[in-house]
Amino acid sequence: MSQPDFSHDGIRTARGTAFRYLFMLCALLSILTTVAIVATLLIDAVDFFATVSPIEFLTGTRWSPTNDPVAFGVLPLISGTLIITLGSALVALPIGLLTAIYLSEYASERRRAYLKPALEVLAGVPTVVYGYFALVYVTPALDTILPLSTFNALSASIMVGIMIIPMVSSISEDAMSAVPDSLRQASYGLGATKFTVSTSVVVPAALSGIISSFILALSRAIGETMIVAIAAGQTPRMVDLTDPAGMFLDSIQPMTSAMVQIGTGDIVGQGAAYKSLFAVGLTLFVITFVMNLVSELVASRYREVYR
Amino acid sequence: MAADTQEASVDSGFGQISRTKDVAFRLLALAATLIGIVSLAALLLNVAVDAVGWLDWSFLTNPPHPNPNNAGFLPAIVGSIAIMIMIALVTFPLGVGAAIYLEEYASDGYLTRFIQLNIANLAGVPSVVYGLLGLGLFVGLFNIGYGSVLAAAFTVALLILPIVIISAQEAIRSVPDSQRQASYGMGATKWQTIRNVVLPRAMPGIMTGTILALGRAIGETAPLIMIAAPTTVFGVPNSLLSKVSAMPLQIYNWASYPQTEFQYGVVAAGVVTLLVILLTINSVAIIIRNRYQQRT
Image 1 (spheres, chains in turn yellow, orange):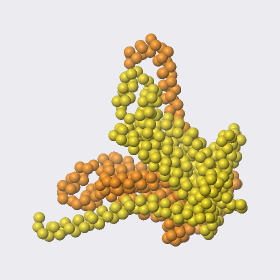
Image 2: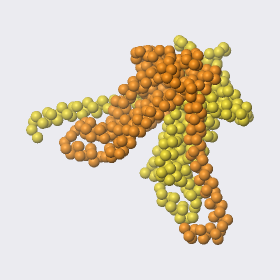
Image 3: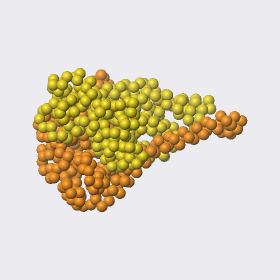
Image 4: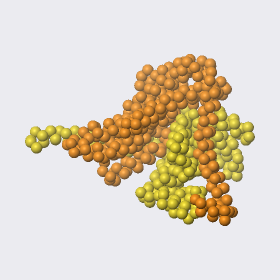
C-alpha cells in the first residue's frame, strides 16, 4: 500500500477508537447507575441514622413516621412484606412450576406457541392495574365467602402471585428444556410414565434453574409496590404467627407501601420522615440485591452442568 | 406399543394406577397453566364492561374533575406520551451503544463479566428504588424540579435501560458471524462493519426490544410517585420542566376515591385507555418482529 493510504487508515482507526470509547462509556453507565443508587440511598440513610439509631430502626416493632409519638421500627413493615411474599409464593410457585412442566414436557409445539405469549401478558400488565383489580374485583368477590377488610393482604398477594407466575414458569421451563433428552429416554426405557419422568427425572435435573426462578420471583414480589399500595392497606403491624387467618384477612403495610405513603404525603423539607424513606429503600435494595445475586449464582451452576 | 398394552393387562393394577396418575397430573398441569390466563381474562372482561358508558370522547379530551361525569384523562395521556418520547430518546442511543460495546468490542474478561452481572442485577432492582435514585439525583442534585417531565423521563429511562441493553445484545448476537467476516474480508474496519452490516441486520430486533421496554415504562407508577410527580394535574404539560402526571398515576389517584362512580366507572375507563395504548405499542413491536422474520 502507498503512503497516503496509511494516513487514511490512521484517520479510520482514530474514528474507530473514538466510537469504541463512546460505546464503552454507555456500558459503564450501568455501573455508574448502581453506584448512584447505592450513593443516593446511603447519603440520606446515614443522615437518618444520625437521628434514629440503626438498632432502634432494625429492632423497633412500631412504625409511625408522621403521627406522634413518632417511631421508626422497620420490623412491622418487613413483616408486612413477608406476608405478601408468603402469600404470593403459595400462589405462584406451585402454579409456575406446574406450568413449566406442562410447557416443557406435555404441550405440543403448536399449543406452546400461543400459551407462552399469553403467559407473558400476565407480567406485562401494569401493576397499578393489578392493584385496582385487587381492590375493586377480587376483594369484593372473596368478601362473600371470607370476613375480609376493605384493604387486606389476601387479594394483594393473590394478584402479586398471578403477576409473577410467568417469571417462575419461563425460567423454570428454560432449565427443563436444557435437560438432555437422553435422561428422559433412559427413564422411558425403564418403563417410566411421563409423570414419573417429569417429577423424578426432569425436575431434579433442572432443580438449580427452578430454585433460581423461585428466588427471582420472590425478589420481584418483595419489591412490588403498586399492588400492595392500593390493595393491602396502610396498617403497619407485626405478624401474629398464631393467627394465620388474621395475617391475610386484615390490612397490613409492606415496606414498599410505606414508601409510597411517605412519597405521596406532604412531607416537604428534610425531616426524619422524609429521610426514613431512604433507610427503608436501602433495606429493600439490600434484600432484593442479595436475592438476585444468589439467584444468578444458583442459575450459573446449571448452565455449567448442561452446556 | 403392543407389548406395552399386553404387559399392562397382565399386571393391570400397576398400569392402571400409573396411567390414572399420569392423566390426572397432565390435567392438573394444564389447569395450572390456564388459571392465570383465565383469571386475567375474567378481570379484563369485568373492567371492559365497567368502562362502557364512561369511556367516551369527553373522557379522553377533558381534564380531571371531582365530579365523575366531567372527569377526563387528557393531561395524563399527554403526560405519559411526553415522558415516553423523552425516554425513547435517552434509552435508545445509550442502550444500543452499551450493547454494541458488550457484543462487538469487549473482550471476555473480568470487566465485561462484571458489567454483564451488574446489568442483570439492575434489571431486578425494585422500581420504587429507582424512584429514590431519581429523587436524590435528578430532583435533589441536578435540581430539574419535583415531578417534571425531564425528571420523570430520566428516572424511568434508567429503570428500563437494562432491559433495552439485554434485548439489543440478543439482537446483535443473532447476526451471523459470517457476515462480519465477509465485511472484514472486503477491507472494512470494525466501525464500518458495525455501521453497515451488524446494525442494519440487528435493527428490527433492537426496535422490537426497545418498544416492548417502552411499553413497560408507560405502566410504571412507583418511580413517578417517588420523584413527587403530582397524581393529578389539570393542564397539559407545556415544557420539559413543567409538572406532569401520567396515566398510571391518575389511575392510582382515582382508585382511592370512595365513590362507586369513580371505582367502577372513571377508573375502569382509565384502565381500559391505558391497556389499549399499551396493546397498541406492543402490537407495533410484534408487527416489526414478524416482518423481519418473514424477510429472513
